[in-house]
Image (cartoon, rainbow, N blue to C red; front, side, top):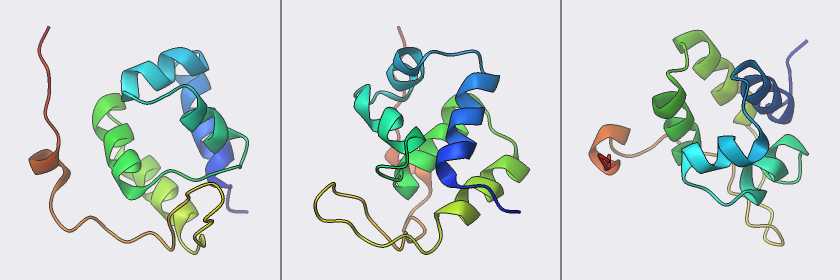
Length: 101
């Protein structure tokens, strides 16, 4: 049985040993965004999935599982969820800027 995106993201965070606040901070997002993903209130954009893959070094298999779980989600104007989600128009590397500390 295929898992929901909310379950996959929750499992990923727990497997990484991160609190919701730490997980959000590493992704550069407000705490509520990943929390809403885990509770099934919203789904991440493809850009957020790209960021998850890069920031947490997610395997190709796990990435495909996340992307497959996103397919078919409808746009929800009330909470701003985009869908069905399209693939990015350009590679994520060209849109991401890493900040060195």
